[in-house]
Structures are given as structure tokens and as C-alpha cells.
Image (cartoon, rainbow, N blue to C red; front, side):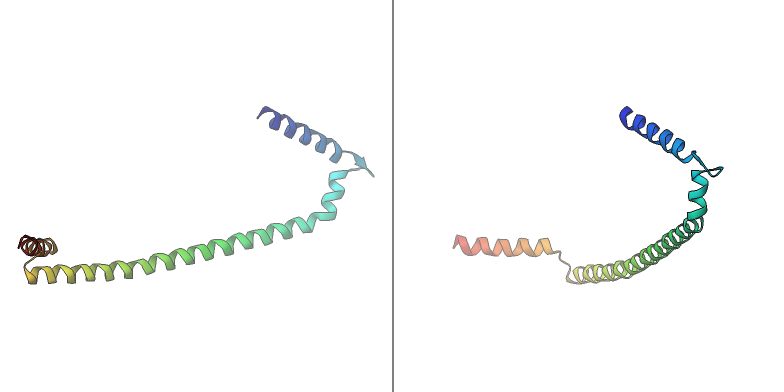
Length: 111
């Protein structure tokens, strides 16, 4: 951990010294920034557009995902309510049916 901090500090100091070397009464950094000035702004603009498009697409996809989940829940709840009505109409639960079948099978085996 200390090694990484030490190496980063040395790299920063060396790059600062190199970029501060005067050439034609201007530091090297000024020459480089004059040469790449518009390019840096263009890179920033394209990166910002890319991030904005990604955020818009992510929001759209999440809205589509959550809007579709409501219809599934309502469909499942209607199936469950139909099942509950059917059980109430029969007056028996599935466990009672299994129990009566089990008793009938026990009687057949015992004979």
C-alpha cells in the first residue's frame, strides 16, 4: 500500500518536472495543451453523450422490466383466486382427497 502511494508520488513529481521544462519561453505543458486543446474538449463531449445515452437506455429498460411485472402478478393472483373458488365449491382440500385415497388403498392392501 505504501509502495503504491510512493510510486504514484514519484511519478507525479517527475511528470510535473518534465512538463515544466521551458521551450521557446513556454512550458512543455502549454505546447502540448495548445496542440491537443480542441481534442480534449471533443473527447469530453463524446464521453458525456455516451454516458447520457447509456443512462437513458438503462432507465427505459428498467421501466419496461417493471411495467411487465405488474401483468404477471395480476395473472397469478387470478389463477390463485380461481383455485381457491374451486376448492371452496368442492368443500374439500387436496389433503383430504389424498387422505381418502390413502385409506382406500390401505383397505385394498389389507384384504
